[in-house]
Amino acid sequence: MVCYAEKHGIKPTARFFRAHPDTVRKWVYRFREEGFIGLRDLSRRPHHSPFKTPEDTRELLVELKANYKRIGAEQIKVLENIPVSSKTMRKVWREKGVSSRQRRKKHVTKNNLRHIKKEFNLFQHTCEDTKHLNDIPEYWTPMMKLDLPKVQYTFREVSSGIMYLGYADELSLSYATLFSDYLQYNLKRLDIDLSNTTRQTDNGSEYIGSWNAKNPSSFTLSVESIPGQSHATIPPAHHRWQADVETVHDIIEREFFEIETFKDNQDFMNKIFSYQLFFNMTRPNTYKENKSPWQLAQEKIPDIKKEVLMIPPVDLRRLLEKKMDFQASGVYDVSSGPLFDNLDTHDLSNKTKELPRRCHYGGTEIAACTLLCGGSGGNSA
Image (cartoon, rainbow, N blue to C red; front, side, top):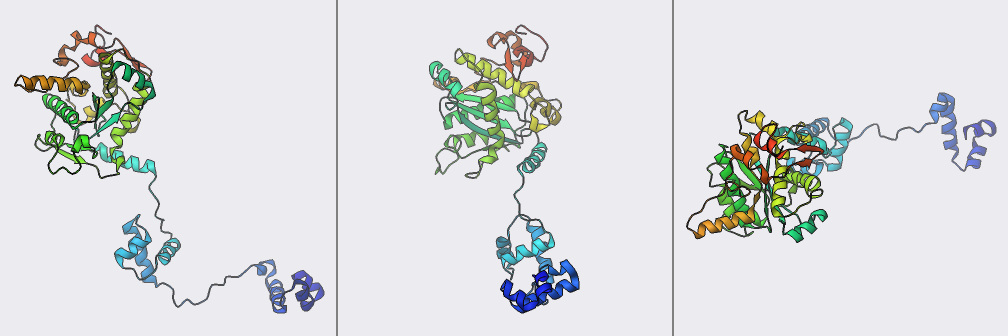
């Protein structure tokens, strides 16, 4: 347009470009004074803004954002009764370079939680949950043919990752209570202090009984029978709070149930015991500094007994039968280990014949008696 006007004049250019003569004249004058830079569009922002947000209000908005962190403009406006709109608040934050409300990255949240969990004392906080085993294709056929357990009860110590297992045919408050009694009996027998322990579960009926029950369930009474120990349930729809025990469920499915074969129920209990020993004693956890639960437990309690990590998985069906037999005879006791009639870890070298000769997990060959007795050899080795 400017070049055409220089050659043909203002009005012919206006007619040719169908523009007003003043428009052509404006661009010609700008080009003559500033060159090509003068052809850029100028800001239409007014030189005076009578309704601009006062500077003291802008500073207040920046301070509030720093205090409320990830709370949004609408919530801050309500909480602090701010006289400006939420849109204006966001505009001020952008101009001031205040970071937007972004969700924490998953790895950042995990790292923060790991640091918090690391500070817990041993058995200060535990997670418990159940896992249905009938949704594992590789396990379903032997489960049905050999009458193997259909439900897994899992106990996980949060700071070290120690895992204990129980097995049954159904979700049941009786089985959960029996599993609690079994673990508490053995942990107390091994001098573990549970007086400051929080046992966390979900709100399943196997832990709290009926949803409208007015009295504590038998599981809660079992847990709180130890002075200082408490039973806590997660809020509804907050399954991530059970991440520690859910992680174990995923690991054990991939490393055990999908690859092992079984002859009968006793063979299953032997092999799951071997896997639990491997998990607690030697398996490194990448999310816990590549250390095993045994190493982390020793950092918490240097003189802890190795037997604490060697409590066998319990067949809750057999344990319930034993309990009923005891009650029928007028006596009730909790067996220290249904897998072995009388568990004595100092005499396990004579019982290694009840364990598989060797077990393979994670590409490592482990002699069961080596893990049990703490030595480098033995009958099964």
